[in-house]
Length: 255
Image (cartoon, rainbow, N blue to C red):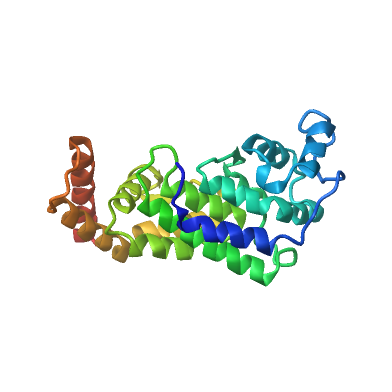
């Protein structure tokens, strides 16, 4: 899905902010010759950044040497185009989520304060667009939480944004998905497990948010208002929302 032009200023800001970075043919990538070829490396250096394709960026990211300081510095150069592709609805997968997982924005020794400030603003603006645009069955709000969380950016502002937009149909539908399908039973408790064990703190953060009475009450009231409104919904969506409404009602009454 291509997101609205509201994100265009952020992309232009990214190109300006990261314009001082450059690369050469000695990229920190796998040198087996299969992950990325010398010709492909030459193309990355030769072709204008704005003109690099999804495939070219994907090949580079997959071949990056994981977590090396030099590789993280080099990705600064490519980042504006990576963000631009995401805004165009062109995603590339690696590890457990989208490709930003190799950026390691938590490395504040390698990312400057103005850069992190921009990335926080971008992730928030992007996430709000996810909640506002046409509902997607391919990428969900949860997927983007994972994307930015794996990248090392704080997700609490995104969770707060989700609450602030709870009145929107898509925000409700995405919440129904994450609540119904992403909480896994561990004994008598339910936990969010998308990030797996190596990102336990993110799982805990989302689990606590999903189980918070305030969160449940806000979406309970939002679903009720939507079901009583004049908005026309198809039968499948109505069934899902009514089911979710009943579950939230039960949860809130038994606390």
